[in-house]
Amino acid sequence: MSTILKVSRFVLPVTAACCIVGAKSACNLNQPLNPPLKEGETTAPEIPRNPPLNPLLKEGEMISPKILSKDPNLHNYTTYEHVPKNFKRYKTTRDFVYDTGIKGFPASYTNPTHGYRIDLDKGGKMTIYAGFIWNGPTACYPFDCTMRGSLVHDAFYELFSKKVKLIDRDITKPQADALMREMFKADGCNFGFPEIAEILVRCCSGPFES
Image 1 (tube, rainbow, N blue to C red):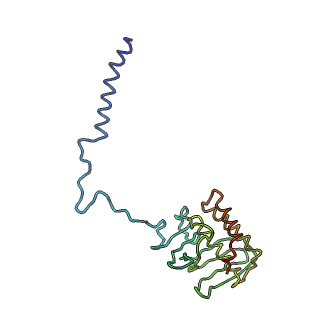
Image 2 (cartoon, rainbow, N blue to C red):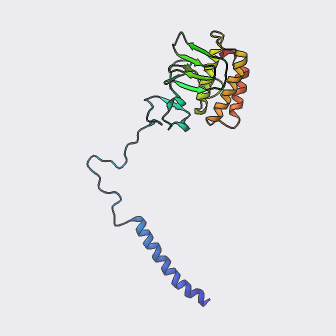
Image 3 (cartoon, one colour):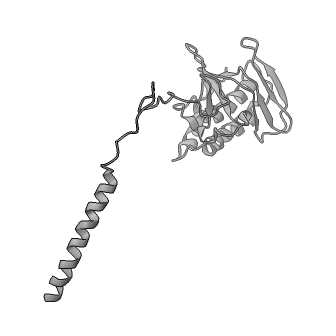
């Protein structure tokens, strides 16, 4: 018992002294909370609202997927803007090139109403030129991870639509639906959502194939 008392007599004063020194240092009581401000300077600098994810983006321009948006090669991603008061709500702002892997169906199409163009070469590389309009993912909410997949998917649907008929629908539609699923996954969609979206477009896409 006497040993404990001796130790406590030494430890308690030292602990108290350390706490006091630490508190003074943390609070920095001898220094002003803020250094003197310069003329016209504020303590809280203004932060720009909704700054662009990529410095190469224009005002009002969006990019998908955002998780990869730092890459300066913007043609690797879907860059688009909203089209107000239009069923097809989005419009590409730059050319988009994607290797679809769907080979053997070369086609080139220019929409007579809106003037946008789609090219698909024999090796499966698709080029969707700036100005293409689409309604985003038909079967779901337009999450960021769905924009690239829905863009390529809609371009395929236009090429084999009843009005255009440039590629074989029976062969390319299942491949386009599966490609959309894989692009959703690659861009961050998960929890079975890509598979559900694929089932929905396979079963319920008829009215949209005009």
